[in-house]
Image 1 (cartoon, rainbow, N blue to C red):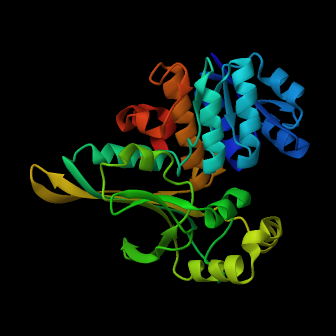
Image 2: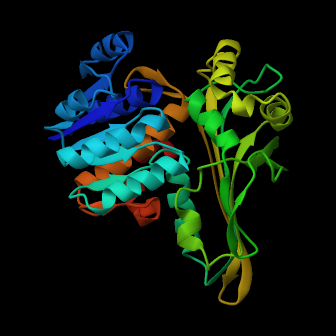
Length: 356
């Protein structure tokens, strides 16, 4: 039985704990400073502990006898948890979209005796694994497009959006520079730019640049592809309103205030969907070809409990990555990129069943 501690008892942390607990292969402990969240989770039969991540001594003590730690905390706490993982020889996983935090964790991993695998959710995470797998069929790559949207099934407000995961992470993605490859050169592109529209199953969506979704895919494919980008999908009209809020009203420099406004104004939507669209063009046996990978995943009931699509896809991908590590399919130590995961191996994990 593998001992795992999940730090962060929010929607994704709770889901990961529930999935790992019900698999029967993991002894799960979930840590959070929010006692109300812990009480709710404890009712599921999952072990809980009260923990302030900023208390280094308590953090290291909590991780001391654990095999694996999964950080389901906001991105700005992940470096602290990764540092503690190195000190306690605990294999580290997280869900962050933050590029700077990931770079810091890579440095921590260099001299560590355990493995570090950040960015293990949906995007970044599963999307990079699936996209890289699709590129392997090509002799010569031209374009790789990744599009992901976590959306309400029934949008009713002007933003056509409801909160389904971390508001801090959402704002971070909308404000920070975005990794891309343009005309064969890796570069940063501006968030909320690169606007486009596309249709899937008769429904129209818009897409625009957001930060962090590529994980290390641009690094891996640099020099091998002409154009590579990641864009977030939304219903038409969302991008224009967010541009006004972030750049004309200057909320990009008042992120905490914007977070409070969004969390007060936008309700949580339990009926949601996750849209995944990957398109790769290039040459196979001398012929110019396009291959597409697309899925729509909806909220569903698991073991008698209702979960949103974004909970299941994000937590499911992270749990599947942890499962691969425990079963010897990933490196024993050092930094692990998403592209080192074989899609075939990932999909064999029961935790990845939501993507099927």
